[in-house]
View 1: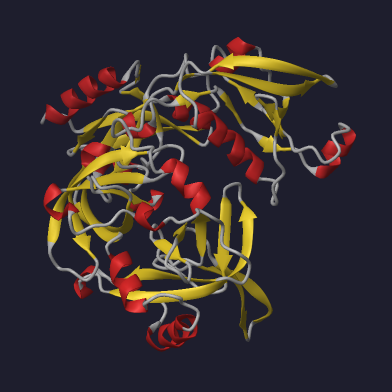
View 2 (view 1 turned 135 degrees about the vertical axis):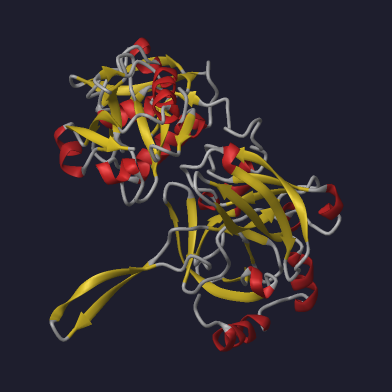
Length: 460
């Protein structure tokens, strides 16, 4: 974290003159909208603590956390002992993990009833729900670490850019809030939610390299970028119905790429934004509806795709348009095929089992976790999901027998002791027999990694 005490005071003095309300009152009221959330991740070999910062969204003590708050490889069953801390407090209340919303990416947690009276929903400070203006001074709250009782501190900065990425995002000259925490205007109205992943590019010079090397510096505890309030508010009601965020709509088409300017001119699209479908899953919703590989998407339900800069934003826009719908909903795609426009109407399906839903089992003596092979594994390896079998090495114990033999995380295990693995249950049964047989000195697995196949001899 940057040194903020002197810089923060000077920046704070600058913004105080712009505020049209009592600063102390604004500060104390809005502190009640932010919390720190601690939880533990139980892995195969350890119990690891994690702390993130979140914003209160309703009177039920519901809290939203940024997507990075939970490791994408963790399944909800590994997430334990959620605790909610108020800003500046060493005391905690219990929290319940509700799940992740696939559209916003937020994780939802609900604080115990005992602490809800001390929390204030961010919606109380919405006002007219407008976007920040260029040059407008915004301020927000940062939280120190647990060993400092999550002490809050002031941040502020002027808006230098508002852009669609594809969601409307405001970027300030200085950090204005923490990731997942709110930012406010001079009157204390909610103006947006801090984003993660925005870094600054620098050039690093040395005596041996006069040309300079590009370096990306990223502040993981503070943010100069925020999702604007009009983008945030419609998503606050998307509290997951279950920990996996289902129901999840599925199109069954992958490999979307934006059409660049040169290709657009060749296709006579002018300034029309477009994306190309490079892969359509056989038997999936898109294929059943008539979508084909190479189709160029121009519009969804009659609305032309908006333009974004960079143009990669249109791919995320299309993905969000699918996720915001439900399985069974019909969606009409206007595509360009062989120089002609035509409409394709698709009934969206139910998303196949996700990686975080996959069954898994750890074998300590062998030294790895076998995970069920799911649809996303087949897509990543460009194989037909209907024909795929085997299991995936989800975790490999460092310096364990499997690791010593050369097994790596995400290796696709196709055979065990020379016999093909037909299913996850089949793999578990055979690995369990090996694990429990104390007379066994070794086992042999055939794995595929980056298209290459290898035979590994694991000495137990």
